[in-house]
Amino acid sequence: MPIRIKHLGLTFIGTAAILAGCSDKALPPQETATPAPSQIVTKDRKPAPLPPVLIDGIYTQEIAILKTQKKILAAFETIKSHRDRNNRDMVELNEIPAPPFGEETRAKRVAKMLREAGLTNIKIDEVGNVIAMRRGMSGKKTIALGAHIDTVFPIETDVTVRREGDTYIAPGIGDNTRGVIVLLSLIKALEANDIKTEHNLMFVGNIGEEGLGDLRGIKHLYRDGAPKIDSFIAVDGGSDDRLVYGGVGSYRYRVTFKGPGGHSWGDFGDANPHHALGRATTIFAERAAKVASEGPKTSFNIGRIGGGTSINSIPFESWMEVDMRSGNVEKLDEMDAVFKQAMIDGLAAENAARTRGEAITVEVRKVGDRPVANGDAGSPLVQQALAAMSSFDLEPKLAISSTDANIPISKGLPAITISRGGKSAGAHSFEETWTDKDSHVAIQIALLITLAQAKYVRP
Image 1 (cartoon, rainbow, N blue to C red):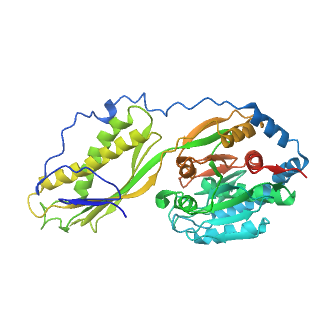
Image 2: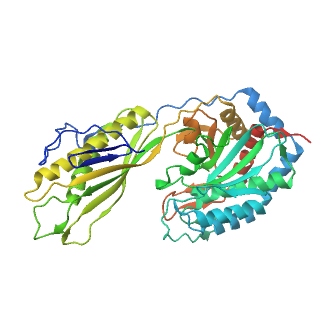
Image 3: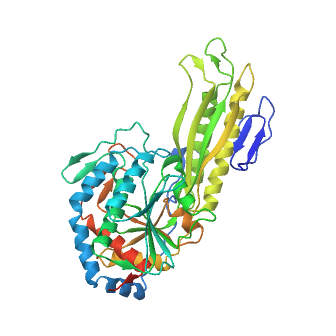
């Protein structure tokens, strides 16, 4: 059950909070020596150093042997042959809107595409994930490959794809429609070449990765009592040489300042929710900039704001959605504390400034919680992925990011996020692009990692 603390107009939902005592008129904001953002030295705003990329020779040899197998080499050629079909499927799939909590239509099409790729054991689970199983010879373990099917864009967004040469332009085209296509092409290559594995393969078109989806698709797969997944490979990355092995955590909130509303002339002097939000935002931005300027990279963002009924009305509510991120849980918690205090102080300042009427209130609701996830660069899955990338003359780079892999990694379970291939640019923008440049390489790398994890069975 979410934690709900209510005190003198302040309600925090979903997280514990320390509330400053204040009277009905409220105290002014706390004094702060925080300099203006332009005065803050930002030279330390860098991610924590990542471990050097060291590949154990055992895994280099394992991948090298896989690349000599006739069926695998044939599968590489099959993947190359998929180019035109992959791109047609990508356009079709992208033009089915799939915002968080609105993925159902696209999920049904993904399920059908999985059947067309050759799998038969397919279902859409309770929350909307599309799951297809490919049984292994022993089935002792389950290796999952996932690509989120939702996009960050609202349902009314025009997701029509236009093409300029080998570049495809549309919201969501790379992130993550192309990721789903990687899974489909990999499955077709396995089926066409009758490639068998010792362990089960689970292919997942998961929902809820973007926005307020809060990784709900993957959280469902890793819920208590769910069938065991022994390792997880997410396809949601950019360049072929980038391997995400750890997770950037995030806290997300929806803040709503509430009051009775009224007429801009007749009720002038009443506390105004928009004004309170403005005060709180200013306080937060100034204090948060100081937190972000020191130590491990930490970010904050106010992504959406709304409320009000007309230009000549005092609004009855004013709301915003806030995102804070860090790969360091202590820094994330420090930013979180600054945020909560800023909401308290913004409310207090507006209530103190009113000349009539009742005090307004604020509700702070936690709407997202992605755990910080510390990966292990020496784990077999990470090592196999690094070796597979290196075998294509790439210089792999370790990275941390906020992806579906956060959930298993935070639980101490093997997981990575790999590239969708090609060249992506402008993610989360209306002019997002994906360029078909050597796009087969990422799929071939994904195939090698999969077969190393699931144990390729030689004929």
